[in-house]
Image (cartoon, rainbow, N blue to C red; front, side, top):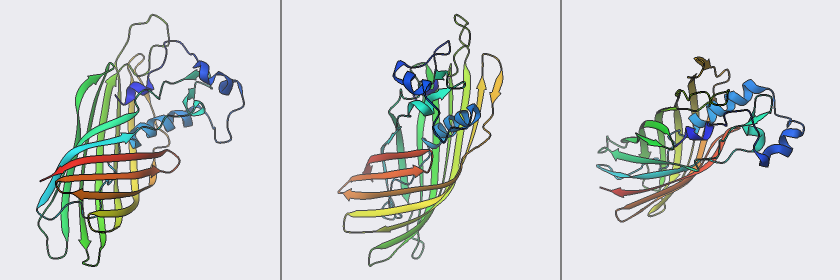
Length: 269
């Protein structure tokens, strides 16, 4: 589902749509194959990060929600897909979305503070020959003011792994071998929102760290990430509670890597 996007042809080849790009000069930001590899490893960890997708106070104290999140996987350009000294393109644009069941509960108030916890999970279902597991969680606290402002702080983490033939054999006709990719992220966000009736616009910003591990089954090589992402992430969004329906949408970024949109639809309980 996620890392099926990293699968490549058995022999080094270039997507015809990228041939003119490959024949031209590399862009100014291009460094070498190692940086291309690091980018791809970081990208698929960051695309599964558990961003807020809710206001600082996500539900009324003593209540929660359960629903489905959809996160866009932005397609990568030809320049970002070229590897092996720009002689081969990776097929990174196969999966357009990350669907993720997600639940959240806000505990009864502790004085002026609302504490909440949430979890999201993608079970190990084989799709397109890949088996993926994504487990995420968050805990947070917020202070709502009667005049509308909400101030919050949250911690989040995500663990994901894929078992599949991700890096296909270098030699044509060689038997396939399962590869293993894992990516993890964790971070802390500060949040600010303003409750306007049933709708609460919000903004968040914080620090997220990404770690990856990639074992290539064909030759037993571990592909090292020499530049793991550790830096700013931010969100701009809004949450609306309409009866028992809870809706949210946001723009999310890890600058230099990921600029995407995410939506969520949940039922309140």
